[in-house]
Image 1 (cartoon, rainbow, N blue to C red):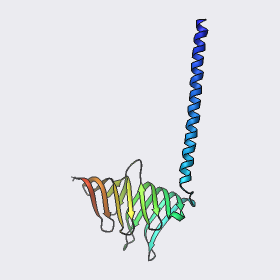
Image 2 (cartoon, rainbow, N blue to C red):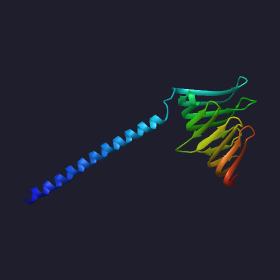
Image 3 (cartoon, rainbow, N blue to C red):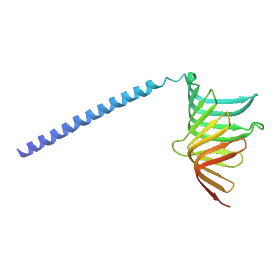
Image 4 (cartoon, one colour):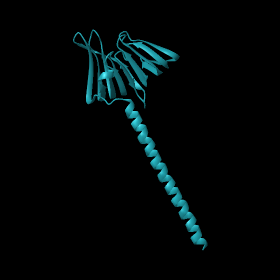
Length: 190
């Protein structure tokens, strides 16, 4: 008698827990589905999905810079392209040689202004300059009109026995002048 009573209690508990778990799973799935429909309704679908995307900025027939991405979502009415697995190459205005290269996980190009943003979520991206310096950060903004790179995030600049760390950066690529904005520390090594 005691055993059957104990089995009945345990069976009831297991059934109640199973019903509760199924209820929570179904409720969670409904929440996720409603969030997904809300998120997708905020943004219009892309005008084009492109694998193997290349975007070039030219002037007088010469390429100033190019952006290469594995995948791109193009939104023509918003003058925007969202990029994945991005590489950017900035070329010298006079020489046409590569002045800067950088690879990033994600990026966005404003096709009206030719400004772009690059982002890495995992590791810092490496901005390699022709002079031998490398700038590391998780975010980078390129402003075409001034040909400047900026970020408000932590940065590290390394090269020629010098390591500079800090937060925030404004840099002009053409003359390779860079200003670290806050918490600047400099290390010299031989």
